[in-house]
Amino acid sequence: MQQLAPAETALLAAVDVSPMLGQVQQWCAVNTGTGNLAGLAQQTALLADAFAALPGSVTLEEPAPVSAMGADGIERPIANGQHLVLRVRPEAQRRFLLTGHMDTVYPAGHAFQQQTWLDQDTLNGPGVADMKGGIAVILAALKAFETSAAAAATGYDVMINSDEETGSLASAPLIARLAQGKAAALTYEPSALPDGTLTGARGGSGNWSVAITGRSAHAGRNPQDGRNAIVAAAALAVRLKAIERDGLAINPARIDGGSANNVVPDHAVLRFNVRPRSIQDAAAFEAHFAALVAEIAAAHDVTTHVHGGMSRPPKLLDSRAERLFAVVEECSALLGQPITRQASGGVCDGNNIAACGVPVVDTMGVRGGAIHSPDEFLIVPSLGERAKLSALVLHRLATGAPL
Image (cartoon, rainbow, N blue to C red):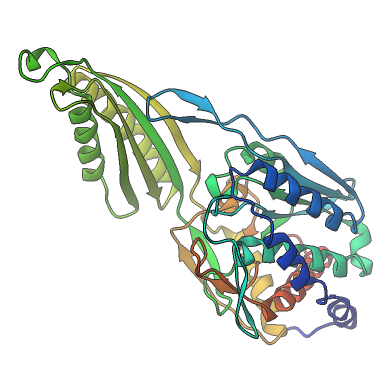
């Protein structure tokens, strides 16, 4: 195993841990549920001030247009917050991408708004691990990296989006644009396990809504003249579940619609999620799904309108990704914190980045756990641990051979 070079030892000494906890607590005191545009705007301003400490330019990027299908089957626009981007040395030939998200799953009206110390090393609070702790790691690591000679010839972009928790639909074009030409990417989701385990390969994820329009009729006098949209939606849900197999999980999640008990319902919306393990699984599902919808429409004499799609492609590990993981794992071992990795069915912006052909490790954030619940926690010493890990990884990527 390699040893730390003198420049790397100096780099690690430059990691300033002292402001990190305060930053996390300040940021987590602001509610940034994905739909809380006022809270997101407040958070964006705080982050812009914080990242202004780095060279380069901070800009606020407008969200891409996004729509959602309502229970009435009508598509309507969804408002999202701005995304923050820091660009440093865009002219450099060797450039990296670091990404995080400022939104959480806790809306403004959620009961979980406070921070609580569980013990001297463990902080419970909304977003402490997922992923405002990770944003603090990005900032501290880059500040330290800027003290090294290697930084002068290296460029990077930082993106903190506002809609990761709802699938990054309003930031996906920005992610794809920023990923172009990057040598590697690091994303700051919390570790897969509280011991620091990384996530390797990931499955994909897609969400669909299917609006079904039938024909209403009296349930007693002339039901034969009706076309029951609820029955058609239920039939589609059953058929979808029937094509589930190893490598393809399908979850029919909700049916909206219906009418009075004495009316044949003429409207329904079926919502479902698909989790393919491979790109081939995803493509096979989409081809099968189109044929299945047409078959159900014909069998039940209804019309359909489909909304949604595969928003997170499966993330597989190619040879470049394996080499990036090797760098991260070696750096972690050198810091006395050896880590392993495991595959996951969960998804994140790492899926989008990998789909652009850029190697990415997407669990570079803090150690913690119980995310997406009121038990979410941050292991506070991991703030410094992960900042040093990222600083060292960036230094080796900047000075080493191409991946």
